[in-house]
Image (cartoon, rainbow, N blue to C red; front, top):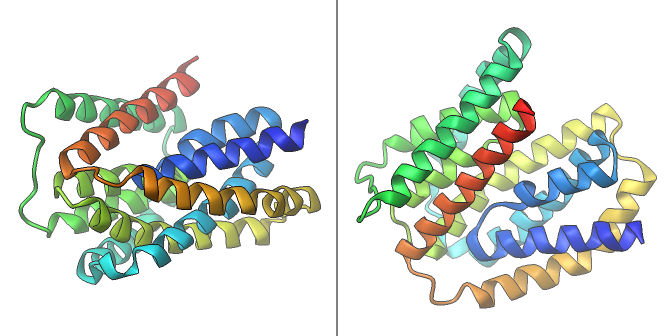
Length: 240
């Protein structure tokens, strides 16, 4: 029964990311952490998320804008040490709750606008990537600045998926490698991952079909809505 539940969580999380381009960890990590221990949940999520991003990157490789993606990745690499330093020296509760408040507040503000905020200048990618690197180094959550940047750039769904997965895939590989070195890859985790692979493949293929016809405005609203949920989850889990 536990194995079926784990596979179902992986499938639902992969389907969400297959439709809107992110959100796997938003669904998978909190639920898996209730079924498994925290280390196992993180390890299984990273392995599965890397597979999801890799598949979606292959599907959308023609839509990757290498200028956008490379700028995000390089600036994220500069931000990771800052995040690690903050994690080591700054009060964890204050930092993580502040992150949740900022994500929730900005996303609600963006949803309230008649016309979604739009960024014309792609030089903002350096700030988005840097902030993503800081959050990734500190909390393993590099996604919010990247997806918000993509939403404000008003990319088509194909461009959004291509660029975000080009960012998420190497990040997931780095995280999964760290988990391997730390000894988080147990036999049970690898079994769950192997059993969940067919569901991941089906979810990605189904997600692409479900997402057909999604406009940039609809995608932006979906991203902001998910970021509201993400921000509230961060706040609630660290305050209560």
